[in-house]
Amino acid sequence: GGRLLLPLQTMWLLLLLRSCLAASAPPGGDVVPAGAASAGGPAARQRIAYVTNTWWPKVDGAAITVMGHARYFSEHGHDVLVVRPSYPDDSPVWERAVEAGMASDPVPPSPTLQFLSYRMVGNRGGGFEPEMDASDLSRVEKGLTAWEPNIVLVVDPDYFVLDTFRVPGLNTLMQLPSPPTMIACMTTFCIEAIRKMPEYWWLNYAPAHALFRQGLATSYGQFDHIFVNGDQSAAYLRPMTVLRGSSWEPLPPARVVKSRGVPADFCTALPEADCAAERAVSLMRERPRGHVAFLYVGRLSFDKSVDELVAAFEAARRSGRAKRATLYLAGSGELEPLVHAAADRLGPASVIHLGQGSHR
Image (cartoon, rainbow, N blue to C red; front, side, top):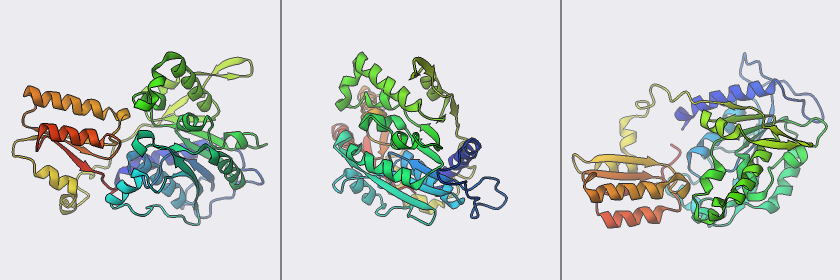
């Protein structure tokens, strides 16, 4: 996984160092110079609380990236506390992780990396997208305050607002005489994405949608810095305002952190024999000669429009336009039954579920 994560990790480190220039000293003393930091690095040792709504055993791009960030900060001499979800024992997330060969956490604790977990509950997204247990918020708040971070990174605070109407850390940390630097990171259009999920049908009504958009604005309005993954995300946040005192004011300017792509050797670094051993690769090589392969990699969920993808492919097959084509889907999620049903209707070599891949 390290090959793909390196560019993102590098950008996030630059993001962090830039933010640290404005960071206040943590409550109770000055920032301690980073004795374990890389040689020649100008940054002081930081205490970074990383609040995330995804972690192992979830196997998806967001979890891979978040774990890479935490590992990177820790290995570069910073003290890191990851506030992460803990999934129910009967969650399908666990089952798919085991199937993918991810039975143990790939990022264990270390002297510079600690964890504070909160429980996930409910059957949202067929159990693949459970919610934060709101009763754990108080314990998380106390743990964050006791740890005394001087930087807090929160990934997608709007997801926490959706689940609990609060963002972990804001209620207590922002009340301190010297609050930490707060950084919000937007990676997804949460409110817009979940409108596609059947259980959130009511968000398609204008008053409910407006209410939650204002909740989104209020959550992002509490941060010192906002970082997004593209111009479209920045444009989405730009018109939002938040009430400060008696006036409505814009959110802090959103800064775009763009991916620089992957290393030049991305397609050749892993030996061909290793790639060939992957189940997904071997299944794709078995397709009939001359068949075109369409490949989808990601969660099998409504918010990813997988239902629309499968319907479009099925229509193309039935019309004869995709007679010699196969749709491969790699990933897991609540729409696995829909994918399997389409495969049954269209027959062999039509729609093939490759299953869940590992972080590798």
